[in-house]
Length: 378
Image (cartoon, rainbow, N blue to C red):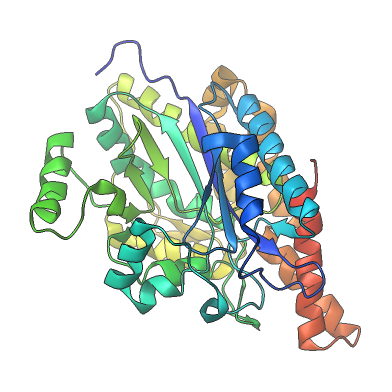
């Protein structure tokens, strides 16, 4: 293991949806000049996604949480300015409240063409967006060890990020419907557990030698060693509508990893639990967000989420201090107070319906709420 320890640098990727402000529907065929202007202004920090109605951004490599916030503000602001200059809006949400996947147009790239040919309907319906957070952990063996332990916390991160309660114009009853769509692909969900980096590489090589995948970028677990960077990439989270929530979750994530590294350095470690039990908490986070609590796997009982969050913040207090992000981590309490994006979307919908709005008009009001929340703080 590197004696100097990981750098715990941060990189955040977010996926957005382009909106027609008149109809509030997705823009299935945005002008080509829109993406070109984004690329001219942001370079490689912006890319197209599988569907033309999507835009993906990625921060630079950030040395701390504050840098990540600054870059996210700049990137969101730029996407908004370019979208507005084309008469459009954008939202940060993991599903659109009512637009249909089969009305969307695919981006013509060889990688995306291959994906849809191989995965067929499972890929064509990927009208979903996520937030991916890279944390710099240069040592290969450490990256695998921390992945094994970090899996425990994936449901907690998901519960705080939910932004996909609607699908095709209906309340799904889930706070994160996105993962039910994504889980139709192979090599998704809670990551496998490996004894070493070499063991991980051997398993990837089996799939590559069989001609099933080109490289490990086709492994889409909720948490994975990045194939492109010396990072551990957390992918379980819905994209956060409010920028403050995204920053708070990125801060918590890097603090958890530092805490796990600190335990390891002191010859301790987080207890490993079976994927079966972690998947149960993952499902609860998808279904309820934080409303009904998660299983405390050590105690074997469901515990209110606010209790689990308080315990988690106590565990990482030393790390938040060392990383200079106490304020951001403590702001997670605000998510419990005002709700995730999913809670706010559902509340807006219910208020509109109670006031006499039709289903369609109530969903349009939800989009308006998402546009406003996405732009907050820019």
